[in-house]
Length: 165
Image 1 (tube, rainbow, N blue to C red):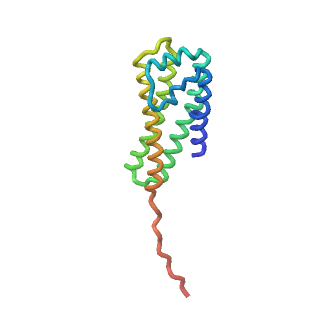
Image 2 (image 1 turned 45 degrees about the horizontal axis):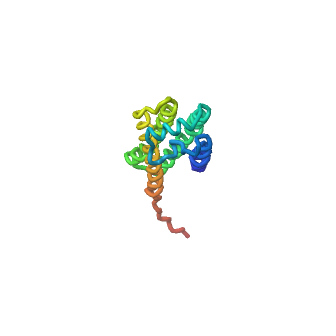
Image 3 (image 1 turned 90 degrees about the vertical axis):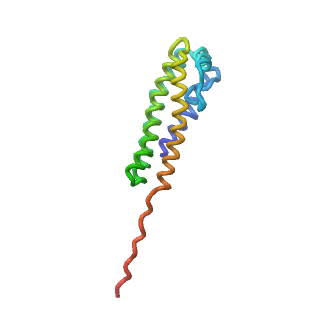
């Protein structure tokens, strides 16, 4: 969990915030919890040069890949070790697994939307929807992990035999 927390901090609170220096103060699309539109991507694209877009792409390929993977594996372990019922375990596992897929797809979509000279409305809408879905699934994953811990089956207290004399 510590590594997941560190990577969240590194990607979202450090690196993506630092990239605003390369975009004239505009936030990176990954940081926009409420999504973005083609106008915003056009502004961002105009403010960033190829090197800046390359740095965002590099972040997506490195820490932007490691964070969802490590977070997903951590949450699978957390849920798997705390939830005994198979159907409930799979239902709770679905959320972090979906989060990983959506974040990967979102990273690729953001890079594609920023890679074209003019912002394609469909491509931007997909990238925005995936970004919002990623944030929603992240919060739901946190809740699923908390539910797994609170639903943990408590070990039954066994009656100790009285000591014999």
